[in-house]
Length: 200
Length: 200
DNA sequence: TTTTTGGTTGAACAATCAATCAAGTCGGGT
DNA sequence: ACCCGACTTGATTGATTGTTCAACCAAAAA
Image (cartoon, rainbow over all chains, first blue to last red; front, side, top):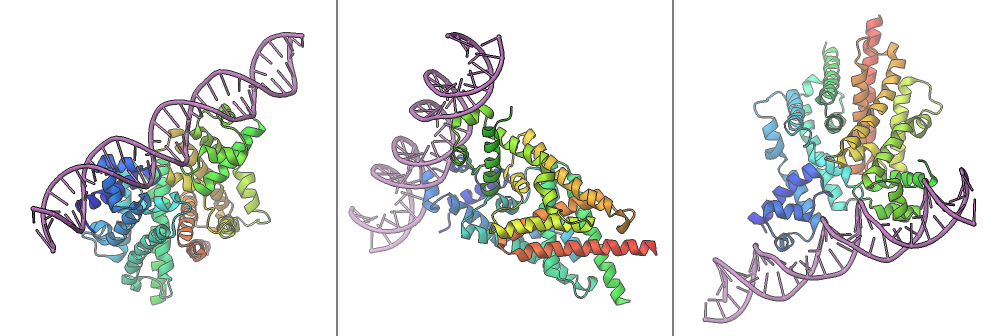
């Protein structure tokens, strides 16, 4: 089932879907970038949508090595891990002149009537991301209010990331990203103060 | 410059771009829905992108009558106005089976390399929305900390709206929207408590 | 050696896309 | 009556889209 060609197609599609979006990426875009011919592509994938599915499956399977490990390198504190993760997206925005946002979020809003398999894969990718952040919150449970809804807060942090990217990219102004993160930081500070009051 | 035909095209395009997105909406989609012929459309608009520009200009010019007036009907309290606005999007999600999210946000993430005029119009729409929320925060200034960055908080609330819609639509679960709003509500409550401490 | 399997090549296809344009309609102004 | 400009009609264009397919290749299996 695996092959170098198949993998090359997926890697290229990951990048093209990220920068140009799904609809604006044509099969011939993928073919010319990979130096693969159409017959080969259709030997591995029944159609364009199946390339998208393979891309989303790759994101799903590689969230650790492709995202978290890199963002959390040298960061131990679970709360700082959250901001390190956000900072990874910030760096992407800056180093690519606001071209690379969140690949999953872009697809989520671009595909309006997605195939159920596609919708579920996007959802799965979101949930994996939320799981990771929720893990950080669990690790820092002793610093937050005892009755905190950690799941809801983790979903909230995904929201901040997506919304901050959307606004910073549209305005082409990293200040929008930074201010969003700053408000989140203030919220977490308030929660931690609450816990201190509980403890005393 | 105005005409019934031109207006019919814009209204139809607003709806189609909202539901299907820009790239997935073809000129012939617009033509068949409006019963207008291609020559007429191209008499008013140099190209497809100019239809998009007219749509974004309409959103920009009609934010009051098209959005705020309706959402704030019978709501006086400025803080409640914020949640009434969010609740409008929630209702849209529910009554359209998660088909209608935020028309501007969808376009913002779908168009990856937009024409500068398009990018600026999307930005202008976001800023108008933020202005409206910032106005609420100004009206409720006596309930929030004196040194609150109201602009940043208004941008933050736009982020919540966009991210909550994105997640709820993807999961097809209104709980994601509600939990996001609930965390925001908790944050505003904490801020208001801060102010009470300042006053006492 | 022959067959099979997994993969490649690249021309070709039908459909759809945004856009064009010459011809026509119609009402108001002169 | 005449013209003019605004608008409409709808066939047509050329480019691009996703997809198909028969021929081809190489290496392993029989």
